[in-house]
Length: 236
Image 1: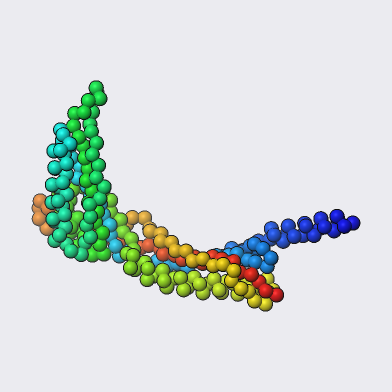
Image 2: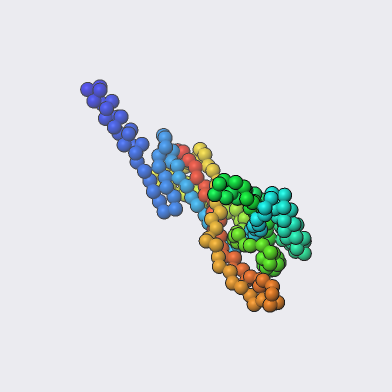
């Protein structure tokens, strides 16, 4: 009789541990004695205000020294052009050099590549700088996102909203479980910045016949979200 009673209590306890609770925008499940774990999320779609681009120069030469000289000359020329645009941050990116072989595995020359990275919130200046650089460099990639200062400000606001959403959900769950109140056991705030696919950009008419036309940017949007997840303990 005693063993039978113990087995029933054990089965009842196991069933309680398997019980789950789900609501729109949050998932909750018992994690211990009168404890619920769940998560809430708030998000905001914002216009991208920063453009990043990478351009490169790829050359070949019969010897490594000549190749390095040519690449350095190309990079220095690009950096000098970039000085005309103080609102654009320009830095040297990745550089690589590797040998070329003939069919007998003998080195017959060298190939090298040097990159220039660009970042700015001034779209007009960046567009014109890219056009200037494309007369001698090749575009590698172009993408848009939210600047750190703008993202930080939005995340601070969303953290407050996520915290309030977590508290509201905690109150709703407390009532749903017929408890009188709750206390927060743990809570964590996490941020996430999801960029939309890279937007398209169009070409303006060329100002000079032989120059590279500047580009009209369509920066698109990004979604910034903050989640608040944690555990509360119900009190009866």
